[in-house]
Every structure is written in structure tokens, then in C-alpha cells.
Length: 109
Image 1 (cartoon, rainbow, N blue to C red):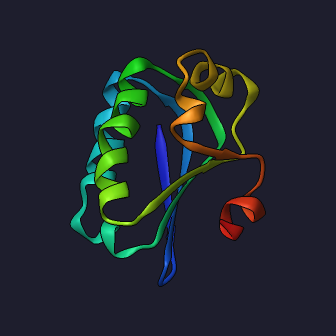
Image 2 (image 1 turned 135 degrees about the vertical axis):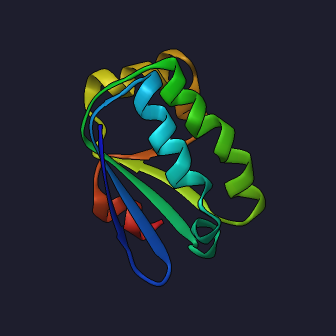
């Protein structure tokens, strides 16, 4: 999996490209663990090119969700493919995490 990072003063956008499985979840965890990430008001996850997510990948997001909330950082997912969104829905994660259809909607939050 490839992670493309784009940041401005208030928002960090991470574009996920490929499959988020056990091996690539280590890379994502390293990105989300960076101390500088908490200086942003919002972390937006672009899922347009995310083809697959495993339980390990979901676990990375779940493990960082509380830390982000405690720091006042919004975690927002957008451009999620239907098959990936279905995984979030089946596990009830769509009620814990903010998922919107477009980047414009994510930016407006």
C-alpha cells in the first residue's frame, strides 16, 4: 500500500492506495503515531484508491481514534469505495467514525 500525505496548517490528508492489510497497517500506524499529527485540527483519510481493508487495518484506526478525540483532532474518511464502506458498516464502525462521500464534505466539517 502507498500512503500519500498532503498537509496545510490545519488539515492533514492521507491518501491510501492499495490494500490495507496486516503488513501495510504497520506503515499506517507509523504515520498516525507521528507527534506532529496532533497539531492538525483534522486528519482526512482519502479512501478512493483503498481496495481492501483487513481487521488489522481497522484496528489501526480504532487504536488512534480516542487519542485524536482527546487531542481535539477530527478523523474523517471520504471517497470510500462501497466494499470498504460495507466492512465499516458490518462492524458498526460507521457509527463511531465520520464517513462522508466527498473531499468537499470532509473539508467542511
